[in-house]
Image 1 (tube, rainbow, N blue to C red):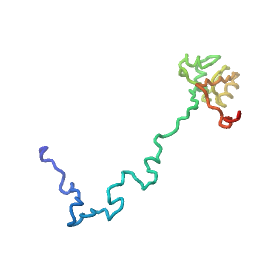
Image 2 (cartoon, rainbow, N blue to C red):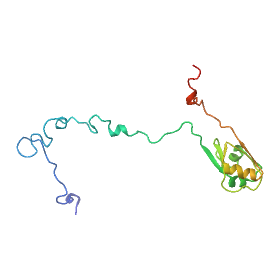
Image 3 (cartoon, rainbow, N blue to C red):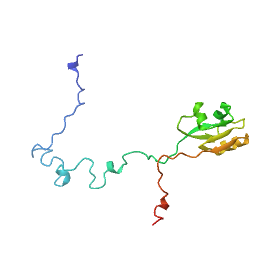
Image 4 (tube, rainbow, N blue to C red):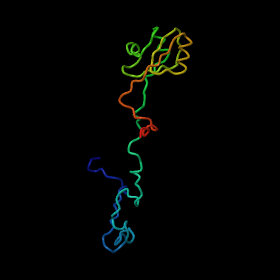
Length: 162
């Protein structure tokens, strides 16, 4: 078999119906569009829904929502703090030891056990982690969050000075 002998099988390809070729025979004159009206005159745009807000405009363009005030923490568990074997843990020490990334806010979570008294300073600490650290004889210090830029005023306080 050669390339020039290739062809679709018999009956697979069907010729398109040629309508609107004179009044003689089927598919002439109105060419299957009925009589008069918008749809007979070839003036309806793609996606037009009769003046209703089209689906392509009703559906949101972008998915989701990005909260500009979201606070994202880097999670550090008790077992990783215990494995360091230090008496004091701060975000700087965790970065130096390779447990956390530089420039991230640290949150201590309660997975694992802590055996020695450790003084922990972090931006956030879970309840279970706080209990475990204090039970082992350690201390928990919550660091202030560094705010980037100016946060907007609370919704209720906008017009109090007028």
